[in-house]
Figure 1 (cartoon, protein in one colour):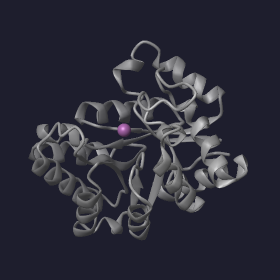
Figure 2 (cartoon, rainbow, N blue to C red):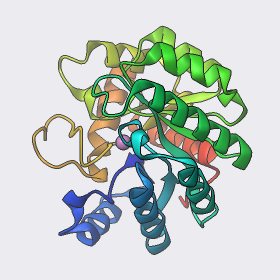
Figure 3 (spheres, protein in one colour):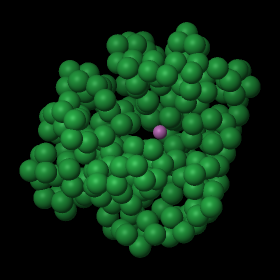
Figure 4 (cartoon, helix red, strand yellow):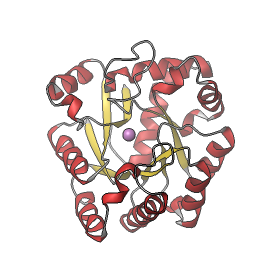
Length: 258
Ligand code: NI
């Protein structure tokens, strides 16, 4: 009963063997994959992957890297894509001050607009926050994200930031970095976050967990994230897996068959 709440199976690195990878995930016990859109074209691909595979769901949104490409028409297209079958959230959206591929004021504007769209459509949001914790919290508050809730994907902030997000009804999601030896802060936050606010993900094809670093990541590797969180929190594997399924059902309103 593994759940990967954040994957990019639409990525070109899966172009040669996407169907085999998805089949392997099913064989390995992955029961739900949420494929995050990151641009208009990737959101369209996410929606079609969800239509083709029962275990896949989609989110649609513009990643901060691509915020520079967004205009009024983008919101219209996202609104219509969000109405498609198995679209469960607006994302991934947010701020990335590490790469700054889009100007920060444009990132903030597009982030705000997409939170507005999520509130209009009553969908939760999937938030990307890289080295932008202060502005992320400020915008989530100002745009009343608490009304829809969501998930802080691949969370990299402090315990204090995690608490502020949970106070706004957000879940905290952990990916491969929590398995890295030098990820002291991620391990501390994983220890702190209550299991009923926690989600697991891969962010594949990126962020491959220990012990497979350097290889292409895929949703089946979420098992290494699960193992590490169980170790950190001294939890039974079954208990974590069941709670993550419950959390996924609660946040995204989807029906995972057990
Ligand atoms: Ni991502």
